[in-house]
Length: 481
Image (cartoon, rainbow, N blue to C red; front, side, top):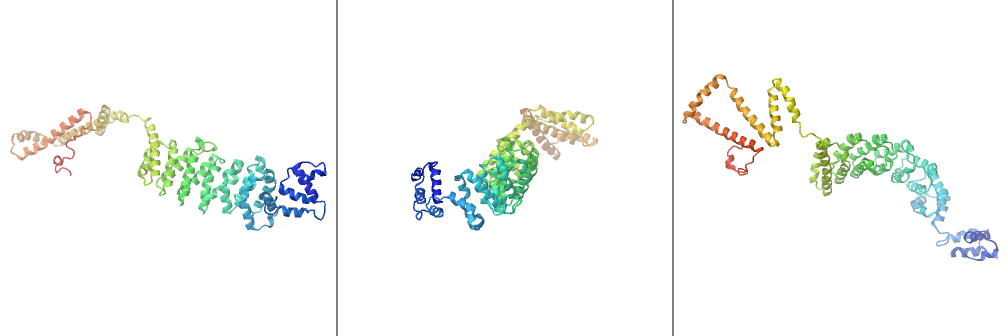
């Protein structure tokens, strides 16, 4: 047997044997192996090395068979009798050794042992990483026949370490699994990770959502995945809240090429009624990275917001963040505000210049009905339309209102008092020493002054501000109250 083993070694390295003299030539045989090979070819049977002794000598430290490849092969053959700590040590470094092994050896020797180990519940996360490492080099049909059934079965496991490993390596194997299989058999177990009590599992589930999203239909994406992510925006862990917002932002911008989602990706209704309220809520989060993430997502999705909603709800929420205590938040807030204002500005260009013409058109009907308030609205609308500025319209309306008030006050007196007042007025004017004359003079001077001021303001086309009187306490007097 020793002699035949030496012949095998020579044929492997130097080609086929044609004569016994070729056994005496080293050729391509490595030096450590050639030394042992000569002892296998000894003519004296008492000195000839047996194959068992050859394996023992070659497997010593620094020997020819002292390699990770040989150790892995022997370990897998005897894995059934190995202790748990030995298995843990072996599998912890197996995924790093597999790239250096021959592909056929990994496929037909290592992979079956790993799958068998997972099937009977003896594998862990390290075993899974080895399966995924080998599965990268398999063809699609082989992958579906060998690896896919094992992975689907692992998703139903209650072992948190194994589930965490599945989530961590999600992007390495999920693309090879058909979409129908993912939706029916993988995703129901995947969603359970959002509700797990362990924060590490919840966070890993959020990160893995981007990998599995491309395998989900539009209905499942909007009805299940998006709602689960929005729910985690209020998670107790700040890191999970931040990652959930980032994941939502990538899903919302998937249509622009970030991800390859089925159909149109996140629907408009999901964005408006599910995502937008969550983003506004996150703007008030006490954790600065959450606020920054919410601002970044809002900026990226600015085109999806309705302009009236931006004006009424979003911009008021952004204003406090412009003076936030954290500089990254302030920077993101200004960027978001510019994007939102641009969206509102574009929308405002589509609106009519004014709604006054519609009011003026409706006023004649009210006038024909005899409504005094309709007549006042018509006069104000006409004045507004005729004026070039809002200030001019305001002064005109003020003048009309003031004049109307004086007329109304005068006409509201009884007829007898009106005649009496007309009869008394000349007498008061002639009697300069009476108190009524002083009261009449006191009333007439401000009225004349007010009329003159109003006339000047209207003729100027707008409000006139007296800079000289600004801050003059003497001019104000006791009239503050």
